[in-house]
Image (cartoon, rainbow, N blue to C red; front, side, top):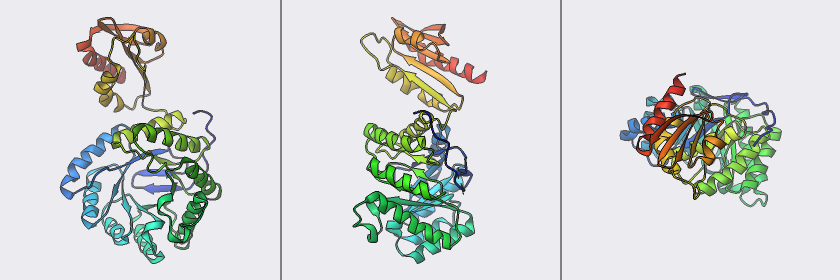
Length: 356
């Protein structure tokens, strides 16, 4: 994806240490995948640190009850990464979360209910300096809009009705999202909302599916909107671990020209010439490679045809060659090692480059 239009002008929303919109870099989010208890807060904070190392800017937690609200609050105390609380149905859970150092509260107009509940949440969020995300989903529209035949238009109307409440309360620290599991509905809703409002947009195709179909649908939807200069933060919603959501989100931003820093891995698809297990090697080394924020191209190839020949521009690469692995930089061979030594030797050379 190239030729991105200039980003549209939006207001800046502050979610803890994260600045969304206003020309700040497009951020990447994920959502915690399991119920959380207070006793798991320390382990959750450690895992969030791992996610942050590969490009995660915010983690959202579902809050189905008071115990979850307190558990999420405990996580927020233990991590420097902004934490968001996802609230449905019971607005008192949002109020309880706001007693903790939560960075952002997500509310859904279709599930939160009466305007007085929104007012209470907005009032306390304003007092605490906490951001809101108004998250409109095609599958949970307000009852007054459920019969609308044009789902995208109904999503925009739901967002604008909530926006009217926020404006009457002079609350400006809000991000909006308009998501559907249908890519076309998602595109039409976001394009229409972006044309009339300057609030930052959180992009995503909701319930996108398992790993490969979900990445494809998300890339088409998120990538197109980013190409139009629309979008300030993204979440790739997958039936897969948060690590995969973050990896996919970061790669979408890079491909759309919204993020340049970090490692870009180039690897071959393997064929009958392959003498090197590319897939397993990537799994072995990905943890330390992806934790680096250096702007490097890394090539992991299966045979001498693809590397170092076709991968000669890589800052660092490795390939199989008969019974040996060849490590190269910018097409020049620097080491030959056994396959058993390959991962250790590759890490040594990677660390050497990162230290330069």
